Image (cartoon, rainbow, N blue to C red; front, side):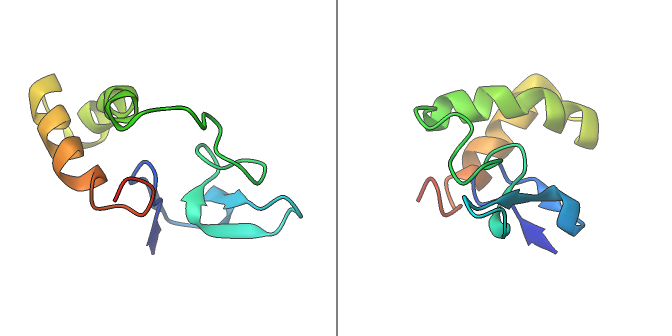
Length: 83
């Protein structure tokens, strides 16, 4: 299973892959971060990405807001977009 190299979302199936400019699948980034051959929010900072992902981690993992923030800071900085 691929993990989005921008937001860390598991891409469990091909429908979650982002798209290159030619419409082909991009296996590095998810459909939310890379929908049409470029980042959905190209000027988004690392800190903004962390904050935008917190609600998803809280729901998926049952984390508190602070636990989600700590988890995301630790893990997102290892991804291709942020390293």
